[in-house]
Length: 451
Ligand SMILES: [Zn+2]
Image (cartoon, rainbow, N blue to C red):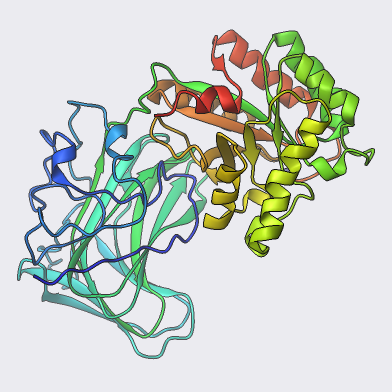
């Protein structure tokens, strides 16, 4: 039997993705009772070859295959399929197009949409062809379905394509603006495949459609769409929050530490070891003062280096060297690493492990669960334009789902910098955490609870 291995290319880590593209497989790993996807017997996460024996022929993709299973609340059923006319069997009487479906093109590709064409089950499907690609994308898409912010959804469809294709989630927000997220890059396939992706609806989202599109000359046929709410749990005994402050700004020390200390909350302070003599940043005595107040000191490289741009030896120096430098100041332990600019790759991750760190945090947006990779922790970044209501939403979401949300701050001041926040904003968040009696842990305390 022909084996096919497909490797997804991550486009970007999406705020709505709980655990982006850790495609998983292996039907024996989860009880699928209640998983009523009628056309997809067996497990349909990820990508597998439908023309062959599914139980044997699951396609191995990136990531820890156990991760997403553990997010599903045991015993809770999946919701109904939210997409109308999901298999495109019904044509509109006048238009002849599939009811509740549209086709669209961003840029002037002059695509050729076709309907009906022969589908996965020999019934009806849609196809899009491009032979004069100029830019953008072309696709068919289903009428927006109502969703709830913060809830989790599993999308899947069947497809064949002569070129790589892309899944993009388009959310309509409460203020009637759209937010777009590319959520998966899929490889070309001449035989029917299933694409599947878990999506968490962001703050203020009210409806959703998914574009399965092509961005080049080629052809894409799609069928058997499904979008269902899925029950998710982070697997911890309760949800919790971490408060991370990046870069070691002197004004953060001055403005944030008193607020944290007064509330008795312990933060994680990521320090650029090469900047401690620069007056914009905390100095040795301030670092030790933070440690003595119970805050965790984390490494944020020596020079705030984008580790994806350097040789192995330079990466090692930035990672292990920063740890050594911080320890030499008298910091007792350096267990947590924070990628500068949020940038990482395999080489950077290995360097972090080799230097003895027990966890590392990214700025990939999302929530962490018990089975998250401790070296690729996700977070929610607070910028100047982030509202308190959105931060409250993230905290409430983590508590409801028993996940771990890491809130990332930079300067706490009145500079008006994009990634700054005011002391009043921090105070409001801290007050809320205290009022709600939310468990606040440092990064290494949180990482210690991972499996
Ligand atoms: Zn930074």
